[in-house]
Image (tube, rainbow, N blue to C red):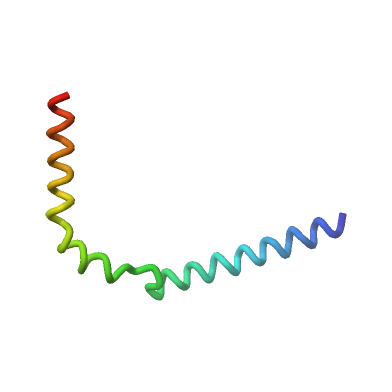
Amino acid sequence: MNVIYLMLTISIIVALVFFIAFIIAVKNGQYDDSYTPSVRMLFEDELVKEKSTKSIKTKKD
């Protein structure tokens, strides 16, 4: 029974360490996307055309 308590304690500590590491990474901007906005303007027209052709096709059916 003591092993269960030990493993539970260790798993909670490991989970907290990973959660703290995730929070630190988010605050430091690790997941910020600086590439996509600069490329989005190049492909914006294609996305608008695809949406308009799909809506026209669905209106005819």
